[in-house]
Amino acid sequence: MTGLSPVPGRGDESRYPDQAPDHVVVLMVFQKPDQVVWLIELLLRLGAAVVVHVDAKHVERFIGLGQRFAGDPRVHVLDRSVRVNWGGFSQVRATLLGIQAALDRFSGFRYLHLMSGECLPLMDFASMGARIEALPPDADFIESEHKSGYAWRINRYNILGEHPRNRAHWHNLAFKKLRDAQKPFPPRRNFDVSEIRIGSTWWSLRASSVHAMWEQAGDMEDFCHRFRWTRCSDEHFFQILHYRAGRVPAGSARKVRFPPGVASPAYLSLVEVQQALAEGCLFARKVEADVAARYWQDETARTGQGLVTTP
Image (cartoon, rainbow, N blue to C red; front, side, top):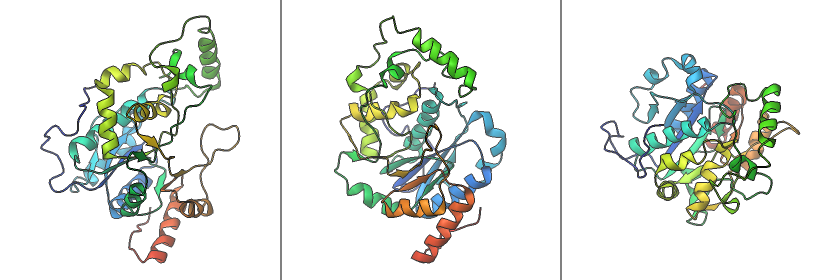
């Protein structure tokens, strides 16, 4: 991967020309371009700037996205992208590209949010900032726990991690056999077991935490190399950095529902999304376009804010 600077800003001429927005969303997308366009427009209305990473496997679906928002300096569609494969380090590589773009183009931001194209913000970003500021000053909305039983993801070699079919049944069988074949051998020493943290991929961080995490990483490429063979590294990379930087996790503040025995979350109903707001969540994931539009139609009617467009 290309060099990632450990501190924000590199003097890019394309940096946001005025005072940077307080909130920047790094948006990871690969499908449903119409919903993504609607979501970007909503994020802008709610008060955020947006950096968009399109999975390199699906860029043809999003031809014209950059041109559509070319006149708005609050939107930056990355012109290089990563082929993202479930369970591999590619998800982290893609996220790092988005974060670096946020640091370069919007260097004065105060809060950074990671979202997918099927996440939905439940309130405006000024309200989110107030929620974050109500936390202790070293805390962020990130899920990060030390759980027994996950050390193998870090200290064993995930040989097939970037295979594009790594959710197929045959792949899982091959993965487990290769993993179990390593048991007689000493584990990798990339991280001490006490440092291993796990949590949701999606988070909201203060700028001060992003800076502290980047400083903790030091040489970011060297730090990335320690995750080269890690299973589901997107659930560990930022969590371990957050822990090593001495920051405090306060949960992800995102509503999600996993059906029993299923690795992917279910789509939320309108009632569940509305409950998420009542529960104090900042975002819901994942949400279909019609439910997202209905939620914000109802919120517009309730608050009197003109925020809704039609997907």
